[in-house]
Length: 130
Image 1 (spheres, rainbow, N blue to C red):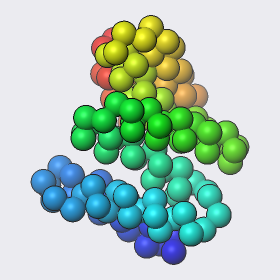
Image 2 (spheres, helix red, strand yellow):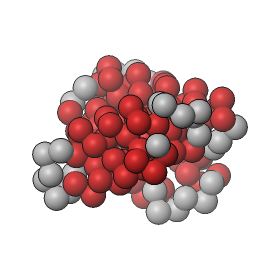
Image 3 (tube, helix red, strand yellow):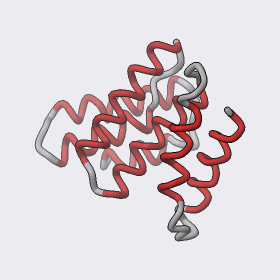
Image 4 (cartoon, one colour):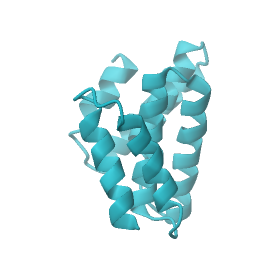
């Protein structure tokens, strides 16, 4: 089950820049498949990725809902904060005039630096406009 879920997650990530119209379906399917197992890092990755899907679809409410879910899941699992989800939530919040979105953006940068995920740090900084 986890292998199938990860396949859908990878297929979605690969298909999106290739203009594969099924990339959103794969992203959603990853969450569905992984939900059949106890939550773990793979589920966190799939949930965090939903914030990207929601951003691409232009759904601020859905993005915020998925980001909140990713943050809660990471905390529940004792895993590092999902910097991508927090950064996207911060971006959306600031776009709608919520100054607390800036706190999310700072938190996302700190999470990326804290886990030494330097490959994602430029995206986090780019999204924050700094």
